[in-house]
Length: 199
Image 1 (cartoon, one colour):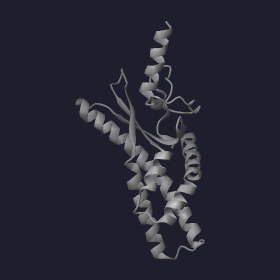
Image 2: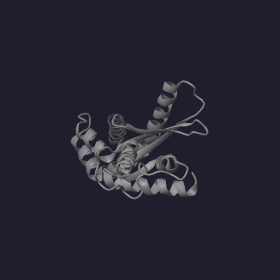
Image 3: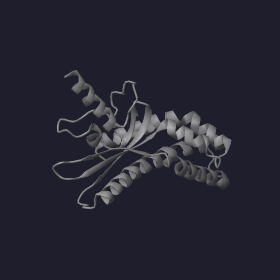
Image 4: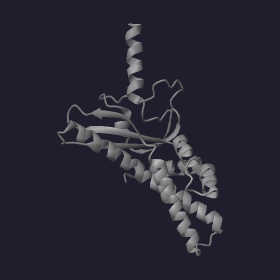
């Protein structure tokens, strides 16, 4: 019996994508646990910016239904999950770059070259970082046949990507590193308000 429990727990961690991770998951970690209907918690929670076992992370949930080709269905669900992260990450970087611009121009937005630099930095950060998105899990709804995919982009991965982004000047890189967690918390609150309002 003990052995069966051990295997069941191991299976839960494998499906959540946290093999070998012994740290206690955050209480609202969407990758851990199962709903009453047997679906993973992340299926109902949906896309968002949440705390996780390894720290803060962006979660994207992609869904596809009615595609008979299994490989195409999986690819579509994965791409939609990545797209969800892309949308959130655009909001995240845009807000951070606006704050950066405000701090470097002291509130004067008349400098068009400064604005162009910020837009270019925003694009670079997004392109460099989104390469680090991982597909962590899949689930098929046994009733509807809908395929769900979970994509994850963790904040530590973002920091590592930015460290290697030679296209960014040092000033921008330092600002993003110093403000990434605060901006993440701001986005988390904003997304929470939208979810509460049903948007």
